[in-house]
Length: 180
Image 1 (cartoon, rainbow, N blue to C red):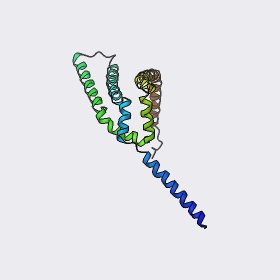
Image 2 (cartoon, rainbow, N blue to C red):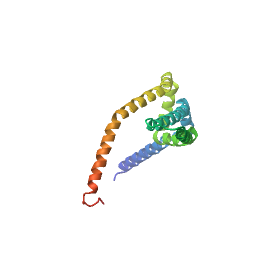
Image 3 (spheres, rainbow, N blue to C red):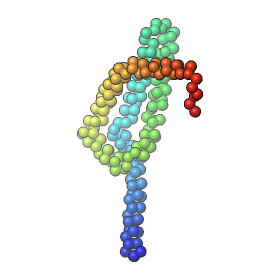
Image 4 (cartoon, rainbow, N blue to C red):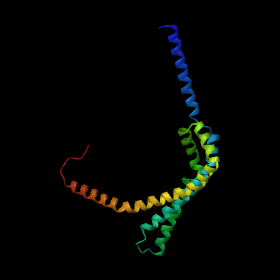
C-alpha cells in the first residue's frame, strides 16, 4: 500500500470519527434549552389543561354508561365519589411535576440541540406564538371529530366483537386441538 493511500484512508477515518462524535454531541440538547422550549410552548399549561379535560371526559363517560339506568341517591353518591377519585388520580399522575422529567428525556432522545434551538426561535416568533395559542382549539376540535367518528364506529366494533365471540363459542364444541 502506498503512503499517500494510507494517509488518505487515515484522513477519511479521522473525518468520519469527528462526524460521529459531532453527531453524538449534537444529539443531546441541554436541560436549559429544553426548559426554554417547554416554557415558550407553554407546555405546563397545556399538560394541566389536558389532564383536566381527561378527568372531565372520564366523568362524562362513566355517567354515560349509567344514563339508561334509574339510580338512587346512594348509587349516585358512589359514582360521584369514584369519579372524583379518578379525577384526582388523573391529575396526580398527569401533573407537570410527574411528567416533566420524562418529557425532557423524550425531547433529548429525539431532538438535537440545533433542532431545539430552531424550535425555540420559531415559537418565540409571532407565528409560533399564534400556533401556541391556537393549538388547543385545533386539538379540541380534532378530539371532538374523533369522538364523533368513534360513535359511528362503535356499533360496527360491537357487531364484530359479537361475531368473534359467537365464532369462539362455536369452536369450543369443535374437537380440534388447541393452538400451541
